[in-house]
Length: 470
Image (cartoon, rainbow, N blue to C red):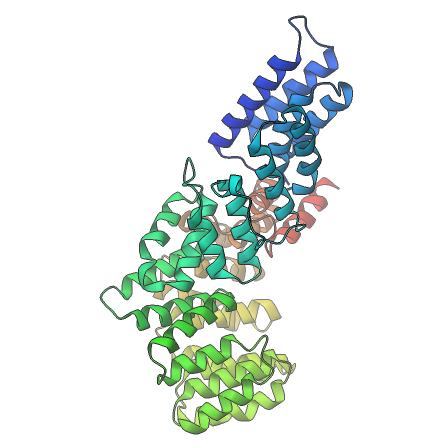
């Protein structure tokens, strides 16, 4: 998949390439094929395709190995193409051509770090302490390892970058939200403004932090932790809940959430939650978290009595009904799950989230789309007319029922509200196929791959494109 380069990176690489050509080529025109490859490299960089630029530069070097100045732009192109292993030999060749260029050693360490050869926590040589690229690569590696505090120190320890890169701003915002949520609002706002498309995690973090303006640091930590949990980032959530428990060790909800966030690596998490439940038997949250840990740990049968006890404490708790639905679903009891999800939505009748959940369950499992998914999605849209996900569910439900023209109009609304939704574009592609519009379908599926090439709808879009090509 082609990597989209930022304008400043493109300009820098083109300048490197131009300088290399000027140094390497005589005034006489080079061989035709070599000139073509150099022109292709320049065109690919201008188009933002680092992978194609790298291929052209490597072809030029095979044609004329003496063009050693080309190794530096090839190294940068490889790094931009997310191929650090390919960058290392080019950097080493460039070091031979430029023995006094100290920045190349830092670039080599950056490539080795991104390739996973060097540990991100290794001590940096003094000459590289202010290398923005190297320190950012180390920060990302540390972030992937769950070392959030060290990652933030790397980001903030080097020189300021010549421009604020959107990916760097996003990483910094997430790290601050996890480590110092009470002071992360501006970083989240900056990252959202710099991003090219809507980022659901950052949007939810900003909304949470805005609601907590004027509140305590404890409240900010709890809200941030719940946002991270809703987006599946258990590590970040755990840091937020740890901060909350540090600020108020007696708060039972903070302690429970912290235990829950540790459950992927703590086999005693369910037992610890049960102990907390014994301390405060009238708090439904404790039952709910224990049940989720049991279900996610592969013991849905053990979760059932815990949820039944939760509903004895609070029969009108929609989260408990929804979790009961998920537990029955894990046990293969589809009809009972449908009953539970419906009760969750009806209990929280004015909350669009539970209507979306009911619609999603119905569509994913083919359970009465006309009787469940359609009315549930309509309710979700009515409760929140600016919710693109609800419109997408409604469009998918109409498509399942064969109302193709109506699905087309509904999905156009979903895309207008959120042009960055892979689900809406994928379902719109299916609609265009049903309407005998292969060009429109191809455009929709290609949009899915451009928006989210590694996401859940990417493989579906690729298979649809292969079907169109065949």
